[in-house]
Amino acid sequence: MTTARIAQTVTLLLVLLRSSFGQASKPDHSVPTKPFVLGVIQEIQSTQLAEKRTLNIYLPEGYNPNDTIRYPVIYLLDGSADEDFIHVVGLVQFNTFPWVNRMPKTIVVGIANTDRRRDFTYPTTQEKDKQQYKTAGQSAKFIAFLGTELQPYINKTYKTTNAKTLIGQSLGGLLATEIVTKKPSLFTQYIIISPSLWWDNGSLLEQKTDGLQAQLTKPLAVYIGVGKEGLGPSDIPHVMEVDANRLAEKLTAIKNKNIRVYFDYLPQENHATITHQAIFNAFRLLYPPPADK
Image (tube, rainbow, N blue to C red; front, side, top):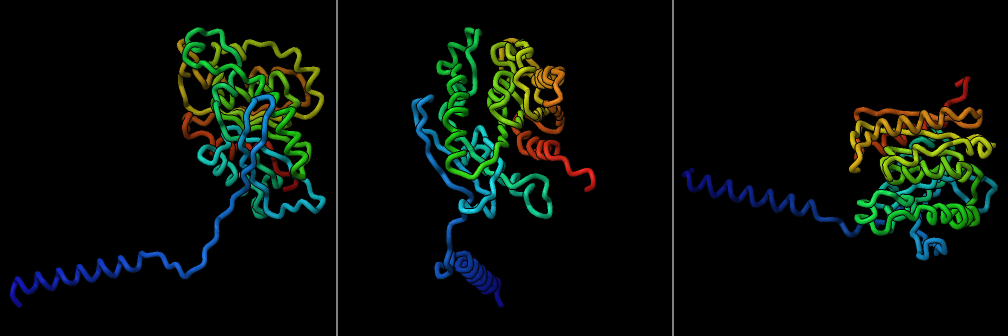
């Protein structure tokens, strides 16, 4: 066989192979498909915020509105589908598998953002931040939304217990810190991750906690996780690991038997990667196994 003939044969084989693979990769439309449903999307009109807010809601396997079983609720800040909702729901589902059984089956309410710097920050005294972030400083309205609108709506719509966990990372962690130091009874557990405590030159860390003693009449658990993160994005230097540790020490110093504080330093994670591992660790610490297990 001549060289030209061999080349023609090889070319023909390549064309046939490419055509064969191309045909195999085409979807078979005769096979029925159906959507993969992770949860439901709802909207709530907020008077406090003067806008509609989108909620992504996960109901655990076996949830039935007609039975007597009630479920704890996790309220997730940054809860959009393209933020933390999907992977946090995965963590909740995994930890509630019967063969894992680390935590009770739980409803997850992801709160989608519209303006997170507006909602998650309190007023600042720093002029540069006032100029740069025109809408910032309205966390009081968002906290009122959580307590007077969202929680009552979820309790009315779904079968819930009194157990309520708030998860917040970065500015969401700042908001969670503000709530736990001002209105701790709004939730029963807090998962605070890489909190942006540099905001307003760390003023939240300087506030006294004397008034918390009277408010801590029921059990409260606080997990604080931080990675190797370095300086926060503020003109006045604030090392985020140091600030998170100061927060843990501040809460631990409250001599009250009702509060449990866990500080978790994850040096292999940073501000972008910490959330998933920190929440997994938080579930392990907040739901310890029975002594006889």
